[in-house]
Image (cartoon, rainbow, N blue to C red; front, side, top):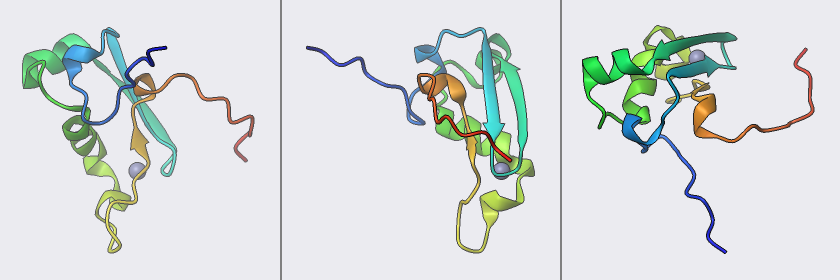
Length: 89
Ligand SMILES: [Zn+2]
């Protein structure tokens, strides 16, 4: 019974094989994507998603909130599809 190692922000680009890396911030309601090959070319395959997240969220005010990092920027590819069954409204 081996559990598949889940990816997280300490994972590197090398561990994710998706050609397109999606990124989204639910708190701000934006979403975008990166071409993996471009990221590897710019930052190397050993860059972590934690670092990519900081870079992605630079435009987000919540990232530097007075209470700290409150930004919801995340990479959907790091998690298996989550069914929260809740429509945002
Ligand atoms: Zn944000």
